[in-house]
Length: 418
Image (tube, rainbow, N blue to C red; front, side, top):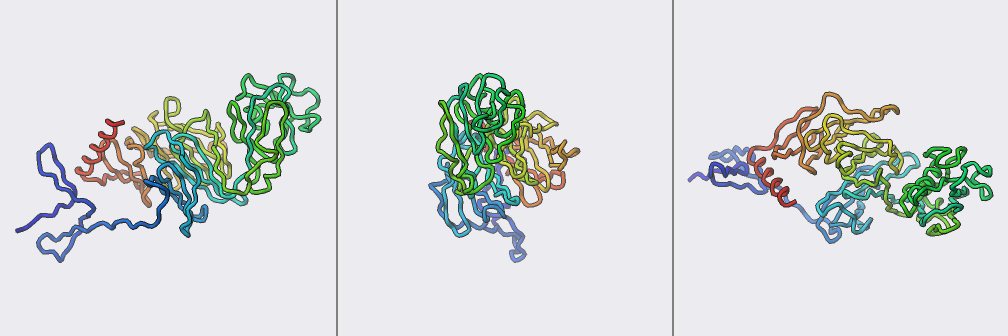
């Protein structure tokens, strides 16, 4: 009696035909079998190599050439580093997520001269940076008032609600640089951040002749805190002096933690969450949580930098649909969206650093989290369950109807339960 072999999962409920399942097998021509000339070959299983955390394992990531080829593993809500010798180190516990199903966005940079490699990661909310030879850090907390003086390294700053040029300010103890006292603690700390980094409006936010602090830089400002770091990674930053007067308080008399592995938050424009990260052309592309006003927008971090300049952004041009991820493909990065997919690249031209690749855009949206790069092509799954291979600007369907049916049913069930 001849028993037919199912070459793939088959399900046609509309026709009321029997369902045939092929689990963990793939079809292959076999000339030895004269009846069918085919065989079902078992797919290789997985072998346990290492236990990391309590599980389940949600994400594994590595970037050859960065962090000595270490593997980064998200086990449940804890992020670990696994070195090539098998040693496991906890990087951050209870990593915040916008929801329990939010995937980990992660990207590692390479070393650029004396600038160490960085690991950026987020689960839809706070963006973090990890370094194995970290910068010395400090935190100034409180609410600034008129007359408060802050020392960072050898430079002094004083908050004032008066003239920003009174008393010949020079950044010294006797004549500190003057910083505009804002109408709120947040605005005051933002003005101090601008003064330290010299990236605000001279004569409005701080003394017009002020010079940039070369010892340290401010990395984030909130209503009650200003976070700063040394300009150079390593232990040398631990000697940078931090003092204050009035109601403000530094955590210590100097910056701390330089030279040790560190994890610290990265301020994002308007404190938006981050859902996608990618490293390309020495830049880090940052995709913020998409909503009205941000759909299709992405930011980028300049080579060697650890902060996002709010003016470094662009927005998908062809359609206002929200993007779900950022995928590096060749020397381009792709933005799969709800209804369309766009392709962008870095130009190397300062006046137009990023541009959309003209002539390549697809009227295919993707199910969030399903767009992946596979060697020299990209795989996307649309909301109808269609699976497409993208190669050299062309789409090729690769999933048979039965697989599309299963994907479509799974996606519809997920949407119903959301």
